[in-house]
Structure formats: structure tokens, C-alpha cells
Image (cartoon, rainbow, N blue to C red; front, side, top):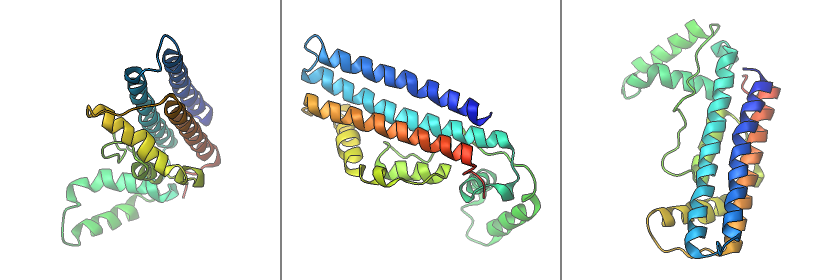
Length: 209
């Protein structure tokens, strides 16, 4: 997979999501759609695109790096950690030094060998994609957690994730049309900027040590 092919995949992934977000907003705006039930259902869809795109985009980037088949020593620390977790997951509960010896020996033997990077089902997302979990995803794929993302943490955890949880758990949550528009803008901005960071990292070789 080339950086151009990665870009094509991510463009297609974000395009259908943005198209659906626009369709949902039209449904909200038309035919009395500004009523509570439709707004609440629409908030769930916005959250789904937030979590869905971040996970898909991250997996495609991991797949892109895997296709490079780089030696272990040339990979960034986050990718080395993924390789180690896959290789030594069965022994990480050991209380002795044996697991660390095994890891050191593995690095010594494999530092100049091409390695496989796990990319499917490896995202450390526990529960909903809160700002804390989003930060973990950024660490895992090795991109900087931007200042503008940090400034949006309260909105991510409250207006997006918190409202989603209330609705999904059957609680009454009054949503105003203006609230919906704010969250829509938040989601579109976050997934677009995350996509840009992933693409820039692919082009600039941010996955390298």
C-alpha cells in the first residue's frame, strides 16, 4: 500500500460518512425533524461516525505501515510495542525477569529483521471513544495529540460521548437543534483533522524510529 493508496482509502471512508452526516442533518431540518426523538437518534449517528472513523482510519494506517515490512529497529517505539505485545502477550503476567530476558533476546535477534505489525483489532479502546481513549489511540499509532484536540476534550466527553451514553441507556436527554449542529461540527472537524495527521505521518515517515 502506497501513501497515495492510503489516501484514496481514507478519502472514500470519510466521504461516505460526511455524506450520511449531511443526509441526517437534512432529515433533522425537514418534516418537523427538529423534534426530540429525531434529534436524539441523530446524535447517536454522529457518535457512531466519530468512533467508527477513528478506528477505521487507525487500522488502515497500521496496515500501511505493516505493508512497509520494515526491520524492527527502524520502527517507532509505538510500533515496536505492538510487535512485542503480540509476541509476548502470553507471558506478560510473569513476575520474574524471564519475560524481560525474552524481550531483550527477541530485540537482539530481530532488530534487523522485517517484522509483522498487527493491525486488526488492536486498538486500545475500552468502552466509548472519550478524550482519554482518543489520546491512547494517538499514542498507539504514533501521532501527536494536537492542542486543538486537547481544547475540545470537554465537548468530546460531554456533548458527544456523555449525550450518546445517556440516549443509548434510555435516559431522557433534551437536545436542541443548536446543540446538534455544534456536535456535528465537532465530529466533522475531529475526523477531518485526524485524517490529515495520519496522511501527513504516512508521507513524512512518522512511523520510523
